[in-house]
Structures are given as structure tokens and as C-alpha cells.
Amino acid sequence: MSSSSSLYKQLGLGAGSPVSASHLLLLVLGAGFLALTVFVVHPNEFRIQSFFSGGCGRPGTDAATAAVAASPVKNVSGGASDAAAATTAARSPDDDVRVLIGIQTLPSKYERRNLLRTIYSLQAREQPSLAGSVDVRFVFCNVTSPVDAVLVSLEAIRHGDIIVLDCAENMDNGKTYTFFSTVARAFNSSDGSGSGSGSGSPAPPRYDYVMKADDDTYLRLAALVESLRGAARRDAYYGLQMPCDRENFYPFPPFMSGMGYALSWDLVQWVATAEESRRDHVGPEDMWTGRWLNLAGKAKNRYDMSPRMYNYRGASPPSCFRRDFAPDTIAVHMLKDAARWAETLRYFNATAALRPSHL
Ligand SMILES: *[C@@H]1O[C@H](CO)[C@@H](O)[C@H](O)[C@H]1NC(C)=O
Ligand SMILES: *[C@@H]1O[C@H](CO)[C@@H](O)[C@H](O)[C@H]1NC(C)=O
Ligand SMILES: *[C@@H]1O[C@H](CO)[C@@H](O)[C@H](O)[C@H]1NC(C)=O
Ligand SMILES: *[C@@H]1O[C@H](CO)[C@@H](O)[C@H](O)[C@H]1NC(C)=O
Image 1 (tube, rainbow, N blue to C red):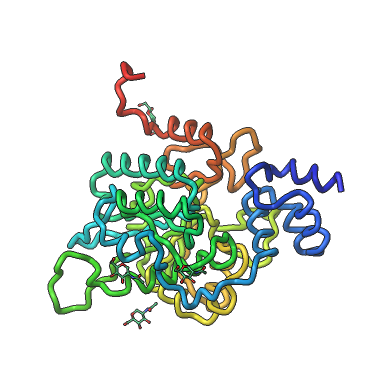
Image 2 (cartoon, rainbow, N blue to C red):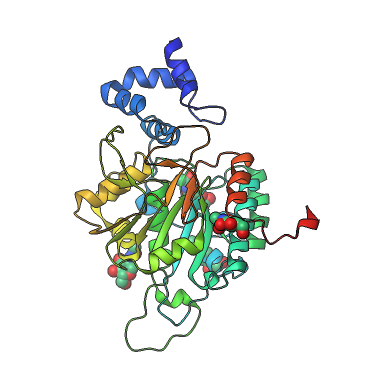
């Protein structure tokens, strides 16, 4: 018992984790060798947490019937047509890549959304072309707290960047599946573009890629767009591929880390309609996405962005997924607190525009 709880501490599943020590012990004892192996050999706290919260999940919602929630909060089509967000894409006539980024978060995380909005709108100010190619949205399931319903509604009116899915809040109970399938329907018609493109050949989809990202991931949008620009527009799966070494065991390799991965639009459509994903979407969301694609022989074009996507290292030893900052970074994950965000933003010169006298 004590060895389990010290393991628990060692692995950094601290306050804020939905899994309690005793709960975890029960799971470890109950889940058998496979789960134990995953647990013991995997040094990535997030992965362990998501594996177990998937294992003990509530009955899944039937996400195949996912629709935009009829809540007081703006729904997906409303949010997308509201051009108030700092990074709202106006469909540009040129062939540049267009990306929808859905940051999975919780209604109550106001402070984190505020930080991320500030960061990404400043990136767009620095690189004006980003506004035409990237839409950043915050994604959560039904808002159940009456307090959040009011406060989140204000945010949605002000920023127009919130997508509410028809699901009960969960991490590994199909939220990502609901996200992809909701987006696949909501943005399926290319007339959602707003700009009247000429008729003739079929209009391109509104987005070339849809990315799922965590709210503790820092994205450098210009680097992301630049790398996607050169990637295939079809059958493409982009991110940090796991496992990236022989020490870490996963039951269904390979897959792109949940820190942030993108699917080309045809694969988003495929996920929304395939039997593989409809039947089986309860599990660690990132591994499951890889699993559907692997089982169906999909995603022939895979882009492993290692070493440009990685976890924050801090005092931990470096590994193939945990690194020091580097100038060509696309994404840094595991930014769990303000100190880590500050360190990251300082390294990437996010505050350089401020004249020294203001400090
Ligand atoms: C979403 O919002 C739009 C505009 O407010 C509305 O026309 C549409 O019916 C809504 N859809 C759903 C599913 O609530
Ligand atoms: C989400 O909210 C909508 C509208 O209130 C409701 O119809 C739907 O059943 C809810 N879904 C879940 C999974 O709770
Ligand atoms: C998107 O539209 C196409 C063409 O109308 C249709 O075949 C497909 O099923 C739609 N996708 C979704 C997820 O509804
Ligand atoms: C940040 O700015 C410094 C000073 O101009 C520069 O040397 C460094 O390369 C910049 N760092 C990044 C990640 O761009």
C-alpha cells in the first residue's frame, strides 16, 4: 500500500489529478499485468493519468449522435461565424494551409484560456498571415454548472472561440471522437467560408487540418503552419510519434502524442463516419486515434515532429519526448503551472516587444 502511494507521488500525480491514491491502488491491483506494466515503465505522468481515467470511466455517451449542444453557450456554428476571435481565419483565396486547433479544456479554466488567448493573439499580431490560416478554439463538453454557464456565455459572446460538444465532460471517454465528428459535420460545407469563391471546381474544405491540443501545450503557430504547409493534404497524421524509445511500452503503437496532433480533413471525415472509431472510442484518446488509423490502414502520410515537439523538461532527465527548449520548437507540453509558462514564454521571447522601461 505504501509502495503504491509513494509510486504515486514519485510519478507526480499530485493535486488536481482526478485519480486518488487509494483509487489508483485499486486500479493497479485490479487492472493486472498489462496496466501495471504501462504504469511502471511510463515516465509520462499525463499518459498514466489518462490511461487510468479511461479505464475507470463512466458508461460512454453515444457520441455517434454528437450534435452541437443546445446550451446557453454559443454552439459550434455560432462560434465559428463570429469573427471576434483574434485568430479567426478569413478564407483566403490562395492555396495556403488552413488549420483548426481545438484546445481541449474545462469550462472552469478561465485563467488558462485568458493566457492562451493572449499568447496566440500576440503571435498573430507578430505574424499577420497567421490570422488567415489558423483558428484557435476552446473545446469542452456540456456546461453543467449554472455559474459556468453564465460566465462562459459571456466569454463566448466576447471572443466567439468556444466550441461546446454534446457530451458529458471526460478525458478519455470519447471527447476527442466527439470533437472530430462534430467538427466534421459543422464545417463540412465549404460555403461556411464566408467569402464568395467562384463556382466551377468543388470548393476546397474550410480546413486542411484539424488539430487536437491540450491546454497545457504551448504552440508556436508560425512554426506549426510552416511545417504543415509542406505536408500532404490527404491521409496525413501529424504530431510527436509515440513510443519514441524502447523503454516505453504501449499496447497499440504507434500514435501521435495527445499534446497536439493534426489530422488532414479527409481523415477527420473518416473518423466521423468509420466503424472503427464509432465502435471503440473509450480509451486514452491519443492512443485510440492512432489505433483506429492503424487498424484501417489509414494515415499513410505520417509526420513525426520529434524533436520539435516535446514535454517541458525541468529538473527531469532528458528523453526522446522530454527536452530542453530549442529555437525551432513547434510545441512544448506539460506546462502545468504559471512558473513553467513564464519560463517557456521567456525563452521564446514572447515578451520582447515590451520596452525595458515598462518592466
Ligand atoms: C447553432 O447556432 C446557430 C446560430 O445561432 C443556429 O442557427 C443553430 O440552429 C444552432 N444549432 C444548434 C444545433 O443548436
Ligand atoms: C448536453 O446538453 C444538451 C442540451 O442541454 C442535452 O440535450 C444533451 O443530452 C446533453 N448531453 C450530455 C451527454 O449530457
Ligand atoms: C460531409 O459531406 C459529404 C458530402 O455531402 C458526406 O458524404 C459526408 O458524409 C459528410 N460528412 C459528415 C461527417 O457528415
Ligand atoms: C530571443 O532573443 C535573443 C536576443 O535577441 C536571441 O538571441 C534568441 O535567439 C531569441 N530566442 C528565440 C527562441 O528566438
